Amino acid sequence: MATAVMMSAPPAGAPKPNPNNTQQRPQVATASGLLAMLTEPSPLLVSAALTRLLGCVDTLWHEVAESLPDLEAIAEGAGGGEGEVAVPGLDESARQTAAAIASRVYFHLEEPVQSLRLALEAGDIVAVGSGSGRDDGRDGGSGREGGREEDPYVECLVSAAIEAYVARMRRLADAADGASGGASGAATASGGADVTMGDAPSSSAPSSGEDDEAALLSDLDPTKLQRLVDVMFQRCYRDQKFNHALGVAFEARSLDRVREILDRCGGDNGGGGGGGSDDGERLATLRYALDSAVGLVSNRTFRDEVVAIIAHHLSSIFVATTTTTTTSTGTSSGNDKLHSATAVALCVSYQLLGQAEPVGKLIGQLLDGGLEDDVLLGLQLCFDMVDSGDEAFVGAVAASLPSRMTDQQKKKEGEEEEGGDGE
Image (tube, rainbow, N blue to C red; front, top):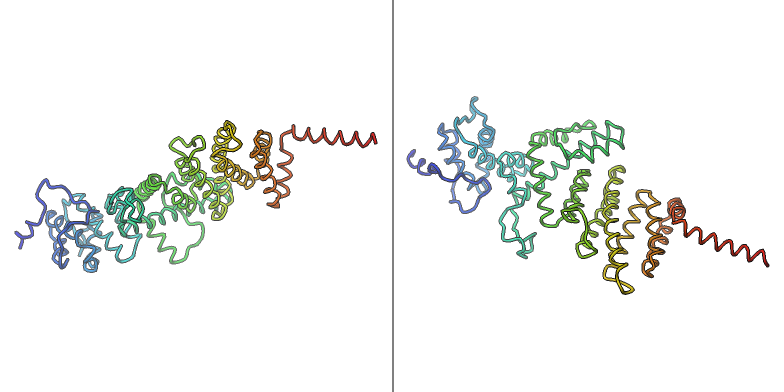
């Protein structure tokens, strides 16, 4: 018996098992014998049993679930008490394998937070965060993102990680709001909470269910969780899924993340091109961000900060498209639609921020640009503002229009007055 068991152990110098590689392993009819081996004093036997268990846990998880305390004790390097497993000399790879097995059992038990906690202990965070289930090529066309057939276990971990990240960041923001009385706390939390993800205090008395959830979340290693979230954001950037990343950043109220995402959607240097297709895609992301900020973000301070960042990026696209439009030889150019859409979104952003002077400058630039399309666009922007019903803002924009326009009006009024006196 011992000889047969020993033969199944990996030879010295053999490569260590990858906890996330569950393919091409021999089928096991029952896990009872392998689970019994977890109580053996030999690290070699325990390591061999863990390697075999990892290969059959997805089919025999209901048996393995009975030994969850033993697996967690091995994963944490604990044990030694009455009825507990204690295996001196067990290497880190075996402990990570035990954590991976327990994580998969909790996944099948539909306890995603516990599954995530142990997956973080298993160590292969990059593979989880990058979504490396079964990769068939990035541009496969299989109907799934990037041609990958995602592992439900990986997707569960990603979802749980995002929820845990958002919950932590929101509690940090809410606690800062309560401590500072609102506005200044919201700015601090949204702008800097992503730097550290330590345990966040609760701003109100939680219910029993919230207590349980908070306790589970507090068990997650904040450093490892932050690393996993960073990898997931990089995955979004790689796959050009900026809208997905923005959704998480808005829920988490992380201004740094919003700024990073909008910089990345415009290129590594944070800038746009000369009005090409890249700027078109960038504008679509910015308009999505603007609509989401208005429709989904309830915190006024955070929303205003987000809109200010969006306005900055829209302004750079507007300048680039203005340059390409004015150098065009025809009455219109291929960038006219991009130019017009950018101007409209920029005016909406400035109106949300209550900044009339930049709107007046933009409209004056369009009216005095010499192009018929720009003049029509400037007039249309004026009509849109009047239709918005914000009379105070419309009046402020009118007062901030370039002075030469006011001088022309005064000259015309003076001529009319002189003509009336002559009659």
